[in-house]
Length: 211
Image (cartoon, rainbow, N blue to C red):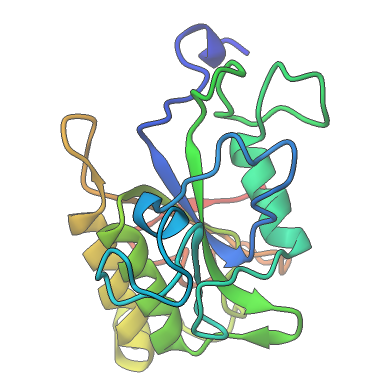
């Protein structure tokens, strides 16, 4: 609450939610959602902004390689925690959901999970790069590998270098000129009852968050 005295959100900031799909038309999210203006008001089935992705209105479904986002419970929950619209008398308040005047941070849906399906490492990396190239300043990743998957940055680079490179790419190419110098990658430490962080959160170029 004390933080809200200084800032309740900033609609210049785009937060990529790398997760299952966001329910972009949810009544507590739709007013804050990021959208690709060229695609939203363009032609269906056409890459209106020539960014290599067709119909990527609210982000992109990297599981199915299409613009249609399939809403998921987890991605929607995470997006709501970040930027559910505040002061609208409905549901919950987002950490940076603004004042109710379209001034919250804007979630972008980078879908890497759909039901029981998930992306391969190169698809996750593509999603992270997409987020950076399309204006995201922060990427939230509430997922991670098992505690025994990797034990060092060197091992992580050797076996999952494509994602590590994408994290570095986002750190360099994300952000917002004049507001944030470079992008901020946030990862969950993991939910495995261990006293150390799982990768990718353990990688030294991320901000790792524990409960």
